[in-house]
Image (tube, one colour):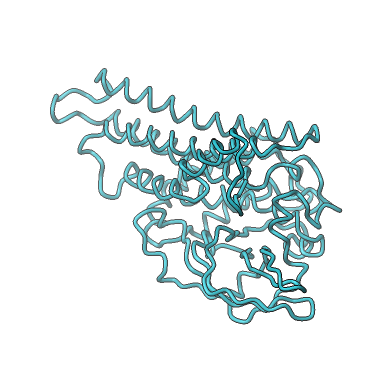
Length: 398
């Protein structure tokens, strides 16, 4: 896609995503069987510009309101949970890359291209070894859950960097995908198989410091890329945006499951009653209430991101209580979507096929909802502590 292309409107982007849905539905079983999203699916999403939505304008991106990504991601996830998960996560990361030094931005977005960059920041490093030498980091280690590594351009990994006085600072380090060894056998799971969230390894890789940012500073809104990118998006709480993007994967999958249940119900005759499922009053009630609950979860996510963007536009800081609420809301939206989907699946009786779309959406949603940012009990505790004005645990991600 040319860097001179005029940015599309949100309705145009949603139409592009919907146009991809038939292909993504057809590819979904293949993604699950091969344990990765296909090159064709990512190429189609890139051609539609879906990874440019939150790419900085200074790097030929569209720098759009995050609601645009959320609405588009819903359409992708309702067609294929694996493709939707990659877009929900990697689609927001160009915004994070806009926080890095301009020198690195010019590398990753060279000549106005887009970028697919997984970020491994949730404590998933194993045996990480770091040495600081002459303005570079010598880095070795293993990281789990590299969703989309097979189609990535770069990866960002969390690393503990030693300071001059023995202190340790957590930094995100950006490394070209070609530098990583991928453990192809590592992703043997019962759900989210199509995301290809495999283990990756670096061995004595040298990373220039300009390809890193301080994680504590980024969470506070302090970042070297501010000399170039400082719009409302860059004043929004980083972890809140990440949590809501993650929840949108679950909610988008719930819409896909809803579509599959409706399609099945139009054709199915209940064995016990010999009545068409669509004509059964109980089934209609369950379908209507489940669908309304999924829509409620979706609207909660959109409401939060609208509120955040509006407040950031006004330049008003976010309180700890607000940040905790966004984290709790993301988990709540995920749980509401999961509960509604469980309710809908129960109406299908014995018609869930071993490899059908209902089964695939259902087990993928359970896997996505287990993400650490979506743990409802953790989110609820943090919000409750914040409401009481109590001290939050160290390293809380808000």
